[in-house]
Structure formats: C-alpha cells, structure tokens
Image 1 (cartoon, rainbow, N blue to C red):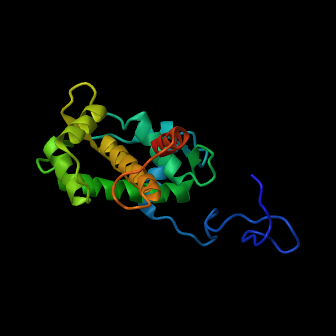
Image 2: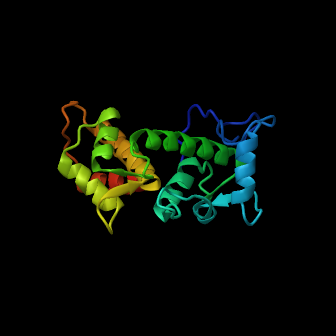
Length: 199
C-alpha cells in the first residue's frame, strides 16, 4: 500500500512509523478477572493468543453444540487488530464483552427459553432492531441458519446473521446516495460487498 504524501498521523519524530492508535493496549491496561479466567481456559496451547479453533472448542450454543466454524472465524476477525488470525488477551476481553452483549440480546428474543429463536422471534428481533423484513426473507434466514430442520436459529447463528445484516446494511447505505432504498451496483462492486461482508 502506498501513501501519497502529506500528513501522516503515524509518523515518528526522526522518521519511521508508529503503530496506529489502539493497536497496542496501554501499559497499565487492566483485563477483568472474568476475561482473564476465560482466556486461560480457552488458550489451550498457552501461546498467549486464541485462534478460531480454540474459541470454537470453548463455546456451546443452546443446542448443546459448539459454535459454528463460521461464527468463530467471524468473531475472531472482528477483534483481530493485526490480522494474524488470532486474538490476544486484550482483544479477547473485547470479544468476551461482545459475546455477552449478544447473549443478553438473544435471551430477550428467546422468549420461551428454548435456547434457539424461531421465525416469529427472529421477526420480532429484527423489527425491534429497525428492520422490516418480509416473512419470506425471515424464512430464508432461518433455513440458511438451520439447514437440517429449517425451524430455528441458535445463538451463534443469530450473532452471524446480525453481524452480516449490519455489514450489508452499512455497505448498502454507502451506495444509496438518494436514500430511497434502492441502489445500482456493478458486478465487481457487488462481489466486493458480498465477499467483504461475509467475514
């Protein structure tokens, strides 16, 4: 990647580049005891980093199954500041808090306490988040999330759906310059959005 000159916010006095703000935690950064405890349990190889496989081994959804590979890769990628495919304890604490926030949201919509969300509950969740999806689209999302039974969405798939809908919505809004709910998009731009929003 080239930099065309001008102001460089990361330039060091005397030359070179410093890390961008937030790339490294402050030296006095404190990690909560709960996050430290979970990190120690999840970091099975004791490398000081967690990858998606280690994360997957630690997370169980409402069906008693491990979180999906896609969900774990997506969540790691969201907090992996250096694009190493792993997260350190500081990035893990952010992920830990993020997962707990989504668990609370999920429990709000899992009204029957079944450990999964059915079509009606998913419709209510997206409606309360400000989306007005057709029953056909909600049915499509459920089938995509539950390819075997086509009936329910587990917590890990709920997180994936919400993150993907959020990412696609942001990409759509950037292109909806008239703010009328429609866009014209070229094929390569479409592929960029689709691949970029996947994880």
